[in-house]
Amino acid sequence: MRAAYIDEFGPAHSIRFGVLPDPRPGAHEVLVDVEMTTANHVDTFIRAGAVRTAVQFPFVVGRDLVGRVAALGPGVTGFEVGDRVWCNSLGHGGRQGAAAERAAVPAERLYRLPDGVAPETAVTQLHPAATAYLGLVTHGGLRAGTTVVVIGAAGNVGSAMVTIAARAGARVVAVAHERDAPHCRALGADTVVDRRGAGLGTRLARACPDGVDLYADAAGVNDLATAVDLLAWRGRIVLLAGLRTTPVLPAGPLYVWDRSVVGFAITGAPAAELAEAARCVNDLLAEGRLRPREVRVLPLGATAEVHRMLEANELHGRRVALATA
Image 1 (cartoon, rainbow, N blue to C red):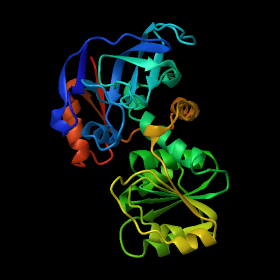
Image 2: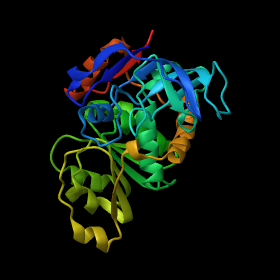
Image 3: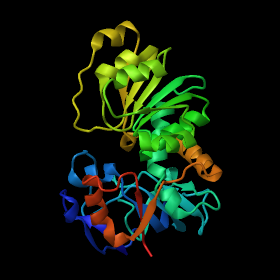
Image 4: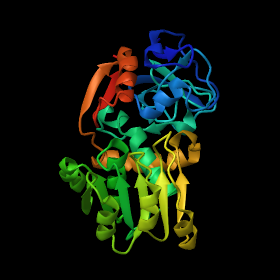
């Protein structure tokens, strides 16, 4: 099979595209013919060795795929050959990646794709939407009637967060560039605050007079000095970006008001949590509520170039689907 892989950790241009042996499904694994994959920032971290995880070289990169079941390993039930399926947790933890014509996927990490959903739409939403769900619900305790602030609301994860929070009945305050306000409102944001200019904390305080119950930073700004003061009693901050940021933590108002800060990365999410998120992702896909703003389809051989584009911040909210055929 053809695959995008590395022989050692390194920069984007270290990704090779060539032929590797077809994987064989082991016990409780499913062999999938991959139709589409994609690349996310976390893939660049793993490729570069910035995130510690078990890796066996040659290492196929990528975490997300959409494809069809080709064969079932021993002990697998619940799938049939030909089923349209998806996965968003390959390429780390000892698992080979998704950027190949075939992949062996643990059955507990594989989900059926709803009928009628285009593969390029699905594959570009699997990682951001699951990240949004786990960040808001599993780690953030999202509930109806609460006030949620989303930093980076027009980005891939941020857009999914606005969608999920609004669907759950929360009041959503989106922080984004003014030009993205219509997009955020269309996703369900009640209020949009321009991220530019001075006094963002003051403007957010006016928009949230009763305090913020859940503050999710999908942009990696991680301005805790501002965020902690905005929280309501027992309000929570969820950090899920900004790998190298070192913010100042105002400890006093944090503990006096029972406030908390939690960190979260989908890479470490256990299979049970991923399956819970997958149910929400499939509901949103079936409802047509997960829609990338712009998708460019490139061949699988362009994987290295897409990694380079991600690291150079050249995509600006656009997504790339990598097709095997």
